[in-house]
Image (cartoon, rainbow, N blue to C red; front, side, top):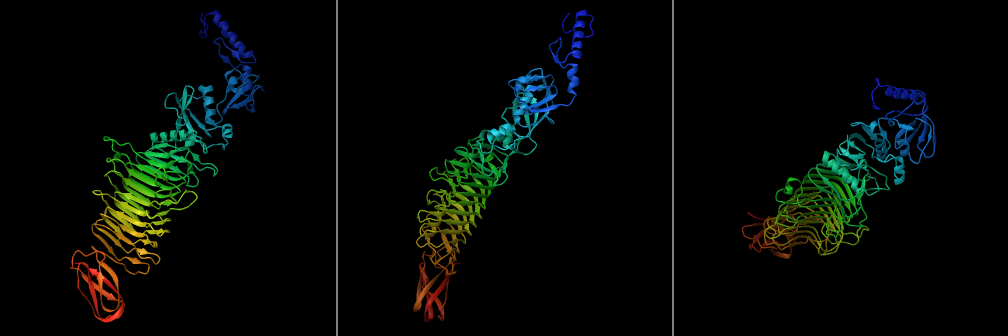
Amino acid sequence: MALNDAVPSSATDVFKRNAADADKLLNASGPVINRLGTPLASWEQITQSHAAWNNRGAWTTTTAYAVNDIWESAGVWYVVLSAYTSGASAATDIAGINVIALQSKTNNEFQGVSGATTAIIANPSLFPLNSAVSTSSYRTPAECTTLGITYPDGGGADYVVVTGGTGTADGGSFINVGSLQLALVQKEMLIDPRQFGAVVGTDSSSQVQAAANFGALTRRGLYFAAHPNSTNWLFSNIDISGPMEIRGAGTNSSVITPASSGHVFRIRGRQVTATQLGFLHDRSFACDVFKIDHILNDTNPPQAISKWFNFDTLFAQGFKGSAVKAINCVWETQFRHFHTRACGDVTGNSAVWDFTNPSSLDQTNNIEFFNCYTIFPNYYGYRFEAVTSKSFRKIKIYNGMMHGGTSDADVATVLPYPMISMTRVDDLDIFNNNITFATDDPAVNVIESTGEAGNLSLKIRIDGNQIECSGNTGTLISVDHTRDVHIAPNSLSEMASGTHVDITANCLESFIEEQLVTGSADLNISNSASGKVGLTSILNEYKQPYFLTNEFNAAGEQAITAATSVNVVFAIAEPLTTYSPLAIPNFNAGSVWITNKTTAGFTINCSISGSGVFFWHVKRP
């Protein structure tokens, strides 16, 4: 008769063996091995187990444990069924017959992930599929002590037990536990990388990337919590695929320092938002904060995927690279309240705000910079450079602060590079900015906009800016190969020998008006344009008008000394003689009339000889 025949049975030998097992269970003092080889608790052990448990705390080696003692290992509590002395490891005791696991403290709650995995591997029957498991921290107290961080570490999470191989184990979204897995239950829309094992102050690039991948898969974002002042988040070269939000607790509370060269975040995709983060570096190696780029091809042009980005309330300091380096196509993107200090790199050819279009397949347009600070850049401030015939379109820079060319300790040398440099930009607005530049280098153009033959920059407006330069040379505003330029009222600093506004070749249909020059220096305008350029109502700080040339209504002033006539000579000849001049004296001149009207100028006559100034004005039909 087989040993495993059921009871009742007519076989006498089976009946005897079953009776013997029952006798052992009733009378033995320790565990019983039945006829099938299974250890069972005796009646004495069962009755003892209902007595009060004796909490012995964490398991220790070579310790005498009595019946009903309980001890803890890796977040799981075990009750002693028969007295014994512990061995070399808790795992050895757990595998033996002297103890049995209790259900973990409350609803399968553990101090850390390692405690949960140890418990499940040791006692998988206590954790059926779809059962809930939670951790108070990613790491146990002992593990936090080893790393020198506070327990809990912020990485506590909820999980569900699933079949092994359900997902790819990445230390966060899926964690292997023997033949099973723990699957992360993400209740919030933002993922904390500490749930993937990231540690503030330690290079956590792989953990942050795993969290970002999970966020892209589940359409969630990343959250970087506040941390102690003495440590920062530390990681580099994180790839972000939108849609995704990257959020911190504030620019001074959630600070990220790069762990290696390259970039902090590379963004590819749509609808990415970054906000409430600080970025801090010491310029010890080259690194960009945000890199936005796309791989170009004929079947998947970047216009279809790179749009609707929002960067708001950010701070970056000390990066030997760009705050934003955008390559190829970027559409409909805002940069608001993004403050930078001591960023950029002349050696690495990285402007603070660096946008390039290297391919004719792409085009960057609808880019807005509002209340962005560019303080002490180590190269260009803003640089938009279209290296092919594709121009940038609709760029707006306003209400910002730019302070460049300084001997600040964070910047090695005084660098003579423009604060704003634009190459082939259509529809550009630069207004209401405060721009200060400290240099004497004559090559400096604080604001420059350049096109090329056949690819002019179009529709440029420079308006309401306060532009100061501590040097006496250089150029404040330079316009070259452009069309439809409107340089509206700006406040320009005194420059003894420099040029306030430089209008060079091939500038068509441009207009300059009411530039307010501080100090006593005259407004200096260089005009070598071959097209039509108008200068009108140009004033210094005393509201005294300066010369004006062709295309729009012209005006100026002409001194006269003890005479009844004086000649006015235009700086640039008028195209026709059909204009109507008007002259108003600031002294008693009697009757005033005009004669000798030519394309080169005209004569002002008066009936009373005197000395003073005629303010003249030309009106065209």
